[in-house]
Amino acid sequence: MIPTVKAKLLEGKKGLVVGIANEHSIAWGCARAFRALGAELAVTYLNEKAKPYVEPLARELQAPIMMPLDVAVPGQMEAVFQRMEAEWLEIDFVVHSIAFSPKDTLQGRVVDAPREGFLTTLDISCWSFIQMAHLAEPLMKRGGTLFTMSYYGSQMVVRNYNIMGVAKAALESAVRYMAAELGPKGIRVHAISPGPLATRAASGIPEFDEILDKAQETAPARSLVSIDDVGMATAFLAHDAARLITGATLYVDGGYHIID
Image 1 (spheres, helix red, strand yellow):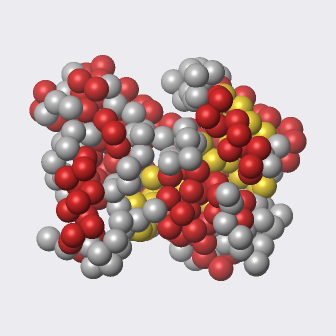
Image 2: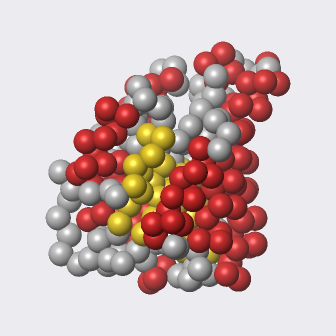
Image 3: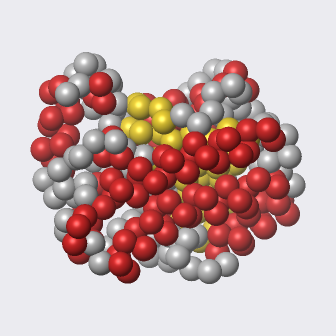
């Protein structure tokens, strides 16, 4: 159920949320928050196998646009932005909440990463956000906000995070450069860095339960973050009140990142 919020602070704004796989997805938490604040949403699903899980969530969001998007398939990303342009003329935000690395690349040492696996990891986890920004720019005629999801492993070595830490470091650097380039047009760019969450993507990281336990025990808030915590923090940054905040990596982790 979408949270009840009295103030529709994002009413009139329209945007895209990419990465909803099921009701446990960070992207779903973001979509719920944006919709609760009054925004109109376009959502995507990875493929036909994923569609039955995403379709009821899209109905709950009353999303007028729901399309397939596998960023590895040429033309699909362009088709999504063309549809939004045709129906809405312009957009206000994009939430990029996808990442992928082949299992053998993710679970191996960085120093052993095969070239193909490395390129796939960077292509889907980082370049796809750059390309979405490229496609979104002409549709953000009155400015807007671009979001992507990162993790603490971009800055510190997190056991078993491996090559994804390299990809997230590249992603956060891209955020800063794009924020500098797009800022004069009123387009803000952010990386959101949640604490560890039990999502489907996290299930590919060995010993992830230990990471969750450590976060809960050592974070100053002594609490794990939820997808709704992440969603509301992200939605706030899309509001005009945050118009002078850009290029940041925002940690939503109960303070976990400040603890040694």
